Image 1 (tube, rainbow, N blue to C red):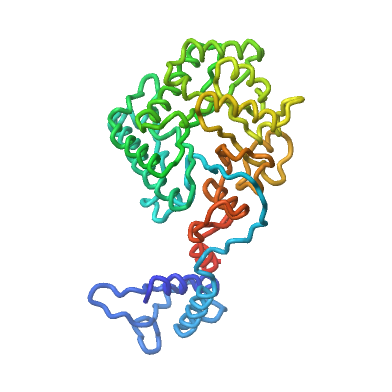
Image 2: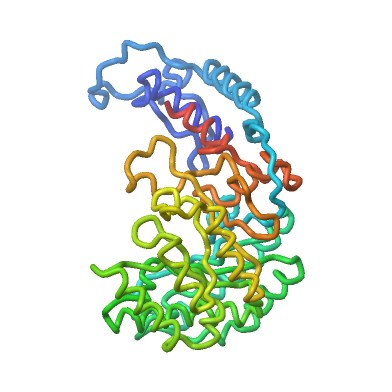
Length: 424
């Protein structure tokens, strides 16, 4: 009897209330598997004293009926499509012909089954694990992350996605004050990643997290922020990524005085940042503290490019400065620096109300913004990552799409549907 038939039989027992009559489906050693029939096999009859349960009032399920149930389930399984049911998209028009990208994680590769085959670049740990297992162990996590990055780039190329943000967690705790380490041990692998990206014409960028605060009034926070930027820069440098490999950060908090904080940001960039870090640095407007108009003067003064984020500007707009004007001024800094312009786009989740809900990114983007320049790259910041990019490819016919790479929004695997149907 197959494992599936065993699963079905147990499901039938639960449904019919005869689970207490379950018996072993596999014979013990040196035994023959026979049906527990008290008429033909008297030895299967339980002694009266050992059967205190009341006799079930529900009918017993025979082997024939179990077989029929199994056949019905197989027929139902056959009726479920073997491929994903991908909904149609509403077609749109755009003059944009730049690269669309996604951030850090490929959901299709990350969710491969079995889990041991998952491909991703953010294996991490806790400091307690480093204390117990040592720095060489955590370095090995970083090595595995870089190896998987090679696989992700190959997948991206097959699917015409040539712009990606690398994960900040590629090397866990590499910038930590106590447990940090150099990436030189992984230089050969990182060079392979950069060479592969260059071969295919892919753009790789980085975006440290919210704890990178160059304007903090606390020196320890600023030092930690600089270490984090140096780590990201070392990663890109060892990959051999050119000037298009920018490192994007937000202005951070205002600490009760926006002007004083902006002055500290400028001073840190001008004085404290190493040249290779400053050459890659890019500022981005955010949804709470700094509008694009707040950052543009600093960006122009220091020749630090500005990444314009459409979603953030929608929530925290620049008075009297429309997005088209902001992008013109921001992209001009990119061009003067010899860097290909890039911007960010996302949409709020459906039904979100209030700024704290609306700041969360939607699973996918339904449209591209109007008036996009043709000679720039656009990072799609959506929960469904590569699937959001592929949906926009379909919507605007930007690139051919491999159907087998598509997944529907909030999809569940067919096997999960079958399993759930049996268990309920």
